[in-house]
Length: 309
Image 1: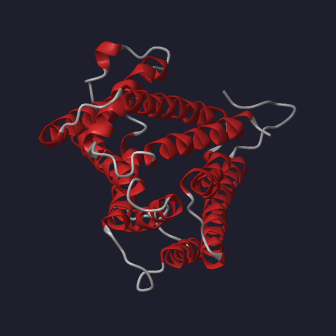
Image 2 (image 1 turned 180 degrees about the horizontal axis):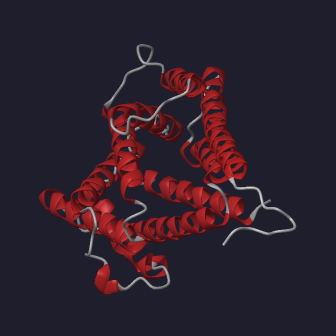
């Protein structure tokens, strides 16, 4: 197994474990804003390890596209708050399945905002993911609450943030992207929690500290995975989170899906993995075609006379 794939599996598994710990706060007097604030305080501990060689702390605030960077950080903050609200109000597997609607919104936004061409196969796989989510949640057959709406809000916000990331990733420093996200979440959640602050117990602080540290470490693992392995190989590992959601939800929170629910989750996983692999295949085909055209356009070199200089 490639090192990058292994790191990604560890990262997404770590995210799931952190989310499972967060779900333990279901019914807690502590608000989701206070939870997010404490989590991000401890996530900051891992920030120094995110700095690439040559990046300086003094340059964090020097942005090439500040409006987009701040917009992405705000959207990612909304996505985070929505996710923590959802995971503490609806079943684990349902939270993840609705969050995995993000590829649908990314595809739609890519078409509208970036004017990218979307292949028919990609549309088919994204629609299959949407059908899988409908099978799991089954609106009309069960009550749809604020937790479900929050999970959808998480997917929309995360998708929009990812579209912006495509635009800024090549021009902005990695340390700036991560630090501004953390700062936004810390400030926003800190201000919002003031209206309903509850003094946490030592046990609650320790559990939220674990979530923050685990999340920070998982983010670092993802960064390192992307450096070692193509994105088309790392992408499918994200769907291990649904497996963790089923296992951890059943083991610790007595959440079990029926046969129809498991079928929906399986459809989400298969469609998601197929989407990522199809994107990777298209990228490889385009790359090889460009390489082939470049070789054809190279001037022929006479083996005797040599190239003209």
